[in-house]
Image 1 (cartoon, one colour):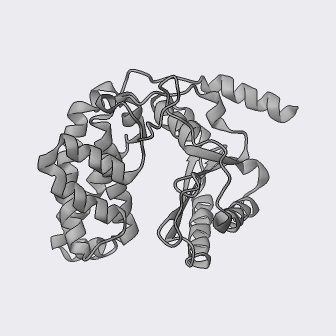
Image 2 (image 1 turned 90 degrees about the horizontal axis):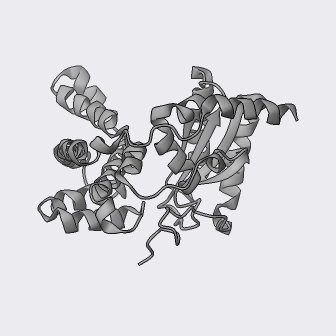
Length: 293
């Protein structure tokens, strides 16, 4: 099995493998629309991640995943433009991908002291630079530690709490409406977060690194056999193989809170070992000199 690590034990970056020919036009179209819809200085850089970035995408079962980094906090209007592009690309290329997702962040988000491990590891090792200066080059290589796992999943509790609040309030008329708004994509996103966070519980004992959902689920089941049935159901949700939304909601509402408690006990204590990696003021000075040149 591929360890996902380099000779020094660091997480191996996805590298510069060629995109699959079937997906080249899709990536070019999405990139072009993002660039065309925003002012030149508004954007810092754009990245591709997920199966399309690793050239392992499968027609109609994979998603397009992109990250757009803004120089300043993106406005409501800027976020709305991104959402429109997601919808437009997802519809235009529905014959090729299941969905299109474009995440947004600002330089301030990425370089905040408490965020740098997660963002730094993600952009350096799991993203392919499409436009602008590659932020990943500023960060050191990361090892597969619980500190890194926490950084990559520090929004787990927020996502689970939001989901739980919707389910808890579903007995009211307004709550029923909110629950009905839960789309298959939203449950898939939460399920994927839960699976990858579950791998973090045992990452330091495994001796390898992976973001592959099936491998993460299998590894978790070896260490938590009593939770394997719930994990298998969560994996189906993450893959979009859901027979009923009510069943998916029940699974996530049962497995998710338990996983959050376990994550809090086994991973969260390591959150503060590496907070500051890159000095943001120095980065800003570099940007000013670079742009002036």
